[in-house]
Length: 143
Image 1: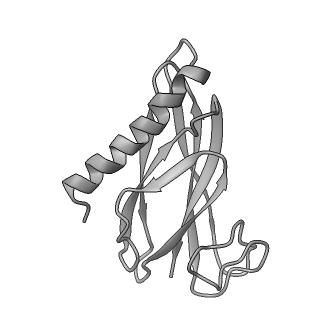
Image 2: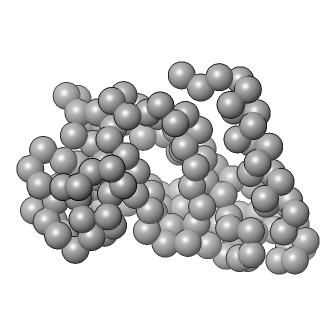
């Protein structure tokens, strides 16, 4: 469970990073964020990234039996004010979170760093500080 102090610190850091640099790439309109489900990847399919802390999941190699990668794709068009999105991941019944992997250039941060071994958690998404547009997919590695 996330503490209020940790949440405030995380959001403060995101605001500082995004707010300080948004002047350089800011557009006149609002920030537009789109979130869509990415295809779920399972055993036998090629992994799109090296999963940190999980040696069995390596980029370009087949995902081993027992693992499932759940993904959500985020597209951000930065506007006059920086904004982000909260994404919730829930592993299938009988599986728990191991780690996360990212493909693309959108930024992601775990709101609660103690997610390993739990079935569900939330991730914060934000635009990288120096890009006006960003697209990325974050995958939860479940086993």
